[in-house]
Image (cartoon, rainbow, N blue to C red; front, top):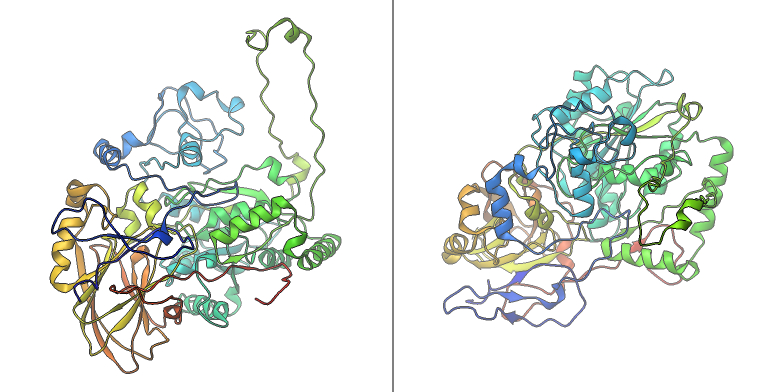
Length: 621
């Protein structure tokens, strides 16, 4: 019994025999920490189209110093010039107008890199550059309603070709029930666009993060999304459909493109809407590289900036939609048919390498190709005889290096075009991410397939999910199973109720509980955990009765014996939402586990295999 709570799980899966390793140098009387070898971090290959951001080692001193400097100081690292007028040119990464007047405002570019409208084409703001190259997320001083105003402005755009826009609502399936979806009818009414829209197509995104917990699990997920739409008032003709997809791994995207092309005659422009961190910008980039956009668009339109930090997109981004003529639809169907007949052995080495990378990233993978591509012209080398007079180590001042010209659309190409717009994400209220620093957000938001971690708890035992959530098993006759679905980098700690308060007091802000990070100074400003009592009745040892969703930090699926009554007490930080989700999102997730680890409350983890959607398999699945 004394060792039931001594388990810490975190990190990414690595197939290796399990052996608990005590923390070296632990002082006498300290809470013992175990390192699970199968969760050691591996180097991550991040291709250009991946949303993943490498997780840096915690730098608590630097994070504390940045918090002391405040949001304005963290926003910029270059010189500003208040005398210079805004450029009128938008940043292609986030949509903000480029300016060098205020380092804490959107679109800031240091004065020494600011060349006015003529020299800014293709330039990105400092914030997007830092997100892309340094993984930083500088704070901005934004009015609370700025994102919502940008969405309302997009909804109020005049109809294109006499047709209202199709709304493509991107919903994070791991965040069900979605906090923003019920606000959509209110937004449409406020914009006066309720009667003008061509419909709402809801995309349940990030299905790649969730394991297959049983037969027809995607059908169950789709029903959960449809139920959320019905509760939000989206039903009948207003709901154009529900699709499940992964903007990151490509699962379901070819089917989504085909569905969008079928709406060509009924809709004008397409607007991507959704909450922050739902994956809108990743989906925007994926559609930009697909058959949905004009063939020249990837060369003329820069991809949107993506990062785990909420609210990356600040204004509208867009690309022109291709007209799906009968010939193009036929050619596309032929390509899809031919690619579906390929096996993995028939792929090129580069395709195999990227496919294997995606398999490590998610459970569900899809291959997204392009039917309509322009042949790339051969590069033309300009001959400059003056350059022959200088050594390669010299830099002739009178012959500056020519900048690479970005392709641009002609007037005729876009005068009648329909556009796909990415809009700013709508902020979620009562969300734990609003309380975290950028380093903490990287640990909390899952960027790889979530590996279920299951524990068996007896009454008067406690489970911690980092220092962001806590579940006490107060009363019950028999043990129950608690399956944690959260970022693999978040630690889980199990202990007894008599020790729980002391452990939180001693280790919150430190390595054992990991998030928040920053020690006592960090915890002084972090809200306390507040409790909510939950009564459940088990339905069987193989099926969860409910999920306890600890805001956006993750959830715990509770499985108990049939008719077994449980009294639980769950905690989340003050000001965040705790939701009891019935029925659970993955009712059979408790069965995805290995053997019990001797002397602990934990079971060995098991990662189900990945599935490639549009690739012919040579054996049984």
